[in-house]
Image 1 (cartoon, rainbow, N blue to C red):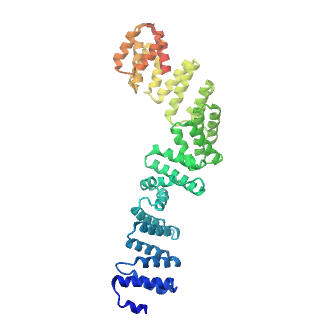
Image 2: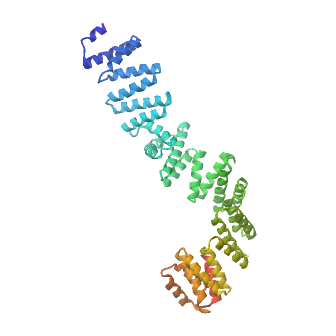
Image 3: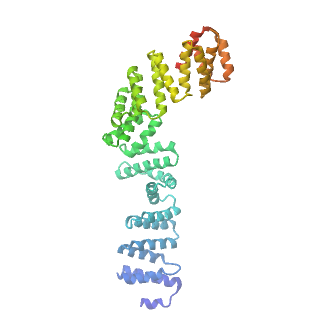
Length: 450
């Protein structure tokens, strides 16, 4: 009877009658195969029936024919004029690709279509936040995280632990994406937010701690580093634990807790024997406590184990300064400054120190030669001014008119660094005329002060 009625219909009327008969056969008679035949007829033309597509999609879902569900959903998207419906259909198809077919790339293609219709589609944004992060597509990830942040911030996390965990992961990943996008100044705020939600989130702690350190926020750097140690239980690879103990030691040193700092630096040495940065940390503590012999011994170890010439130079310079200024072993200090020049012939610090020692000893020719070398090695106005002052003190009379001396220096250096001359004049305690040896002592005091 129904089939006979179809013979007189055509076009959209025939399409709609096929759809109606298919729905009746499925929902009233339970004749699925017959229903599918009618429904397929209703979707086979240039203008498929949306009702028939929806019914076929339901039948395919019931049969677990997921590929067919997706195909029908995409067809329905094409015939639907309602944007919200189209987005919903694409979301559902993408979720099937992801959950039933385990096709993440296929899901990405469908979610991308959903985003093209609604750039605030939360299921799509949630998917791409993970997808782009996992595949390290940092440029594509950034706008996704920017669009999704407001939705995450609006979630009530007080009573929903799962949502809190998801939000924690979102803010951590957002921080990483920002870092890869060169927006380092914005990263710490996201890691900090992740830690507000979950203070024990290890990836966020490991990302935040070095950034707090670099920002010289010593207390937060210490707190986060301590939390990492607790969560790791003191275990892990030697390199990362060494760096962690070093960072923690530096924080505690900056916060005035030298006892704890010393323990951290020693822990770093336990993990990586003869680690130069750890030895440098210990040397800093010896300097604070004015334990000069221990400091010299520690710098001997640094010289022995350092592979970076700059570290060796700094060690010799520090030893020289301690020998000269704290222990009054000037001859030994000279040997150390000369060692520096063996590594770097144009090192201004060592050259200038040797020059001021020669001046105080009355070795004017040697001091003048060193002053000339220091002038050539000077890397800034500060160093240039000191070099010219040293040269004037070597070449001038035995008794100096202070005003004339300073005017001569200023004439040579131009604008220069007048702070050097201000300190030098202060070291002379207001004297207007001074002997060379007195001027040499003032120059030494100026050198040390600067």
